[in-house]
Length: 111
Image 1: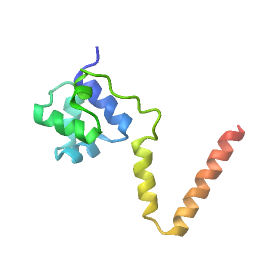
Image 2: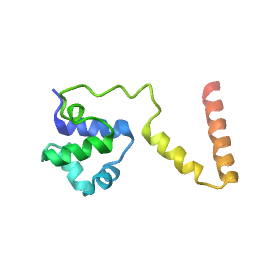
Image 3: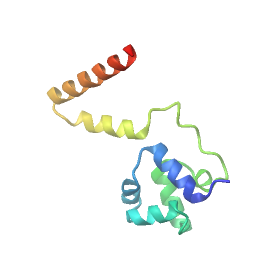
Image 4: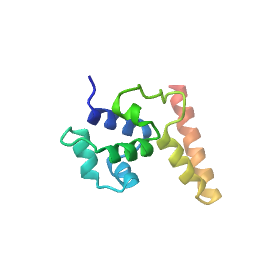
């Protein structure tokens, strides 16, 4: 059976967050997230709520009462965050990056 720490780690990775990024979202330090994931500490009820909100899930999903929704149908949150960052770049840089991505995809498809 999956522990809450293992669940936090799995859901964090599925959301595309590093431990540091998740910690920042809940206003805590990265070491605390590491301690949760390693089973050294269990989040308090308040932190459980904040973690669930940061991960975009319900507390039931975080606690394992209800299974988390499959995220495979949606683009990864990490990819979405990067695309938002890409949109802040000047148009010439965006074009360069998109051409690079297209080239890599094309090269991978030919293999």
